[in-house]
Image (cartoon, rainbow, N blue to C red; front, side, top):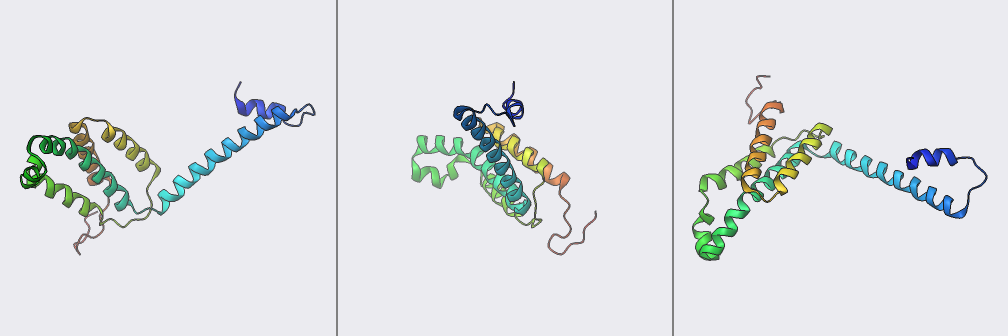
Length: 162
């Protein structure tokens, strides 16, 4: 029997003991905390600019994808040589990561949709796994999502074609 059903069945009965009352109170508090936390996340998501949300995801994906190569390069060459060799990662990749984050930050639309929060959670799940290529797959999927579902009204003064 679920805790909520037990709470409702015991509501109004005169045989409440101290232990039962404390248990019911803790159940009510747990449900209240869950609703407050859910409301806080949704409130923050409504106030968060989409550009900042997606830029954070992009940056996390790039760091996760680049981290293993950076660590391997430092172990093989040492800090100084690895840094001078751009950690054996092409400058094009470094510039692409920086350009991608800066372009996504241009979106000043306020409010992240709940579907985007779910997509972000899936993205984070893929990125936190210790598999570098999986991070790049997640970054690619995020890029495609942004390209397909973002309506760019004006980009540097150019008129929109939507």
